[in-house]
Length: 366
Image 1: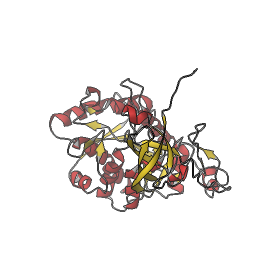
Image 2 (image 1 turned 90 degrees about the horizontal axis):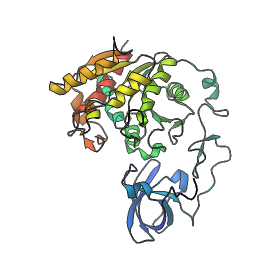
Image 3 (image 1 turned 90 degrees about the vertical axis):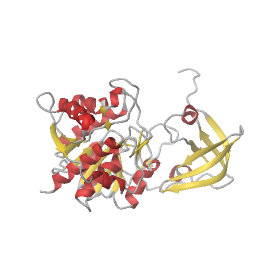
Image 4 (image 1 turned 45 degrees about the vertical axis):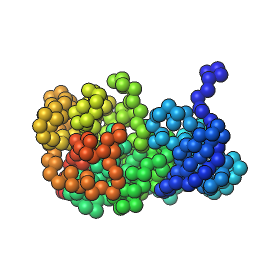
């Protein structure tokens, strides 16, 4: 690649500490060039920052206004390096061959206390697996599920299409603290979950075996990537997750990405992301909950979703009533937001995800 530069490096000084949640610490940093930026550090990677610390940060995505949540990201505390991790840690390398590659212990690796249970594991035994495109669907899916079946043990499997550190997600951290999630499994290049695994397949088996989950929600971390092309979006992995759940004997539930407010025609009603991922990538059948939305939007969603079911598609379409789900969403312990739009701005988006959770509850009734 010659002399191209890919990363914008800056040095600065911590001027204040901000909010913190499990695995992450916000801070204000005055860069040596004079401007002040909001930054984010992952203490397990770089150590715990203090007021007055010198820091190295990257600012490329921040300067371009891209999806890092408005943060400069702390790369190192060069004057106060953290202690080495325990020598007996795992050997799964995530974010491989990047300068900050972490070594974690996977539930499926040799040396793990769960290795024996997972070594020949091959069956989810009908475990419902709700697959969603966007991370913002996670709390809505769980809200719909728990509205009809309180106390259900739910695990979140985070794929690596968005953020790699699970710690970036305040949503996942808050849902776990509120008792809505049993735990988080990070797979692929993603890391920082309560359980680490190599693939979506072994991650699903770990969710059942290690976390004793009754339902698993699969979605990428925050910050999906799209290009406005048919195939160039990270949500393609939703179709692959349906395949993983199906081949392992789970019960895939394909949550539709729906919007009433997106200005882009390809995402209005049922997003082309869902139609492509479930209609073209998913090769095994799934249940597709179709939210019974009112009016013209409801008719549009029903018509678009029909392409996924017989006689055109391989999936089973399931009409899902929405009574009580708005109230369940309003009681969620996290702020609901998708693509910058809240519950009142794009209600249909969250109702569609909640409908998938409601359908998953019915699969546990028997």
